[in-house]
Structure formats: structure tokens, C-alpha cells
Image (cartoon, rainbow, N blue to C red; front, side, top):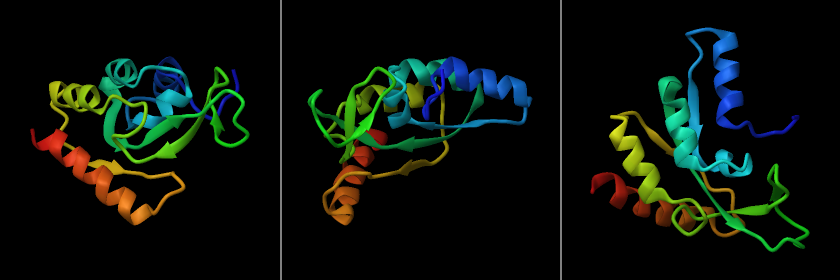
Amino acid sequence: PVAPYQNSAECMETCELAGPDLMMTYDSGNMVMADEDPVEFLLAVKSRLAHAHAKDWELLPPDAERGLTSRAGKKYIGTVVGTGVLDYPAIIKTLKSLNYTGYLSFEYEGTGDPVQAARDGMAYLRDLVVD
């Protein structure tokens, strides 16, 4: 299907077609938009993992006029990491189990104050990573 967000099988197919040098950024929020569990996605693409990226989504009511629409038709809007639908304790635990030692970049796509959102989200992630 044509969609702005790929699932793990589609990402792996792209990598295989491109060859062994193509790696991927694990962008945890994109998996939600492809209607795939972020931890399951991470485990499926672990052999091509080069970078990790953190963002979060708030699920909106089905009749919401705003928001981004997932493949299954659910609507989401960006929110502060740690306050949305993503299970960051499980995501960080999985990254650690894969011995990921690279950077974890941060993204905020919400409607609130981006500086405060970055402070709050980074503090939340720091507590999980350092644990």
C-alpha cells in the first residue's frame, strides 16, 4: 500500500533491495502511524539499526478534525515524550537489550511550548536511559 509510514517488513524490504550499506533510523513514533507496535518493529529491524529517535503521540477521538491519520485511520497529534501512547520503558529496555549505544535524538511535534516540551521529554527519557 501507498503510505507515508512504512511497517517493519516494508522497511526491511527497502534495505534488502538497496544492499548491505543501507541502515535505518528507528523513529519510534512512525511505527505507531504504520499501526505497528514500536517494540515489535524494533526487534524486526534490529540488524539494520543505526540510530534511534524518540517522539510521542496522543490518540485523538475518531471524529477529530485535526491530527495525522495512521494507516488504520486512527488520528494522532504530537505530544511530550512520556505522556502519549508509546511505551518508552519497554522501548528503552529493548534498545538496551540490543546493546544499542548510539544517540537517542528527540523530536516534539505538539502544539504546546516546544522548549518546555523538550525539557520535560528529555528529563523523562534521561531517567529511563540512566536507570
